[in-house]
Image 1 (spheres, one colour):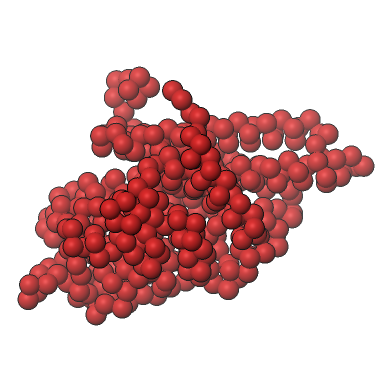
Image 2 (tube, rainbow, N blue to C red; image 1 turned 90 degrees about the vertical axis):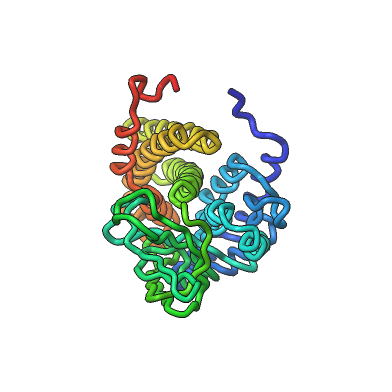
Length: 377
């Protein structure tokens, strides 16, 4: 299998890396986090690079690129610790809107491509425990229009988004995979209120409360679409984690080569050299599984879902190991808010839990295991 990137993909990577180096240094990132995590200005700068149209079809004003290009971008954003809701707004939302009627697509996809609109998925519910089919938010028709009632939690950039894509139950029991529709709720719609808050990793999220909120139907058969979009989000989180681990490892190696103990640099201690070798091994295991996840996004649902969960298990283990070991090597400075490494540790911890933590996806892999355990599939 050819893992070499094309010239266009390399150019894309270089463009994002150049913007990160020049436009998003740690001091800016830290200031944004301390101010509450609002990043709409940062998101607009990504739009100037054309990144918000990456996954939007060309017919709707986007670039129409695929999952490998998205992975390339996410790695660089992870390396730069960019805390804008890029994956949520530019990768996950277009995948969901692809199931919408043409009129809805034409109304929103061009705006997403230009960053005129930030649309995010609001799917998490308090008792769901990462189960996508556990939906208690209800959708009913009143006077020929759809209205939603329920609550969604930890919605990314909730008070900065222009609209939300909300899974809601049209029919069936709370845990049924059928009867789940997807709806678009505009910010400020009657019956929709947002309570926002900063997150531990310097970003922003919020609670979306729906009390008879007016909504636009995307599709009445939305579960398969939701699964596919979440898989795109998981692949993006894996790629971002690779970039963050890569940079955190480089920071740690640099620290080992400059920090002295007993008159010599930390890099001279064999035990620490062994530890950083283990860190590098986990990084490369994570990188290979991130590639695997992105390349499997075009597969049929059973193979895709298993591959995505397998990747999330490995990335969860790698992110936790790299974050903990690099912080341990840094010592006390590694947990101070003024030092950049601590922010990578926080972000890796959040990514490990995004779209289902390691234990959840280990269970998903187990449920989908065949007689070959997926090794020869």
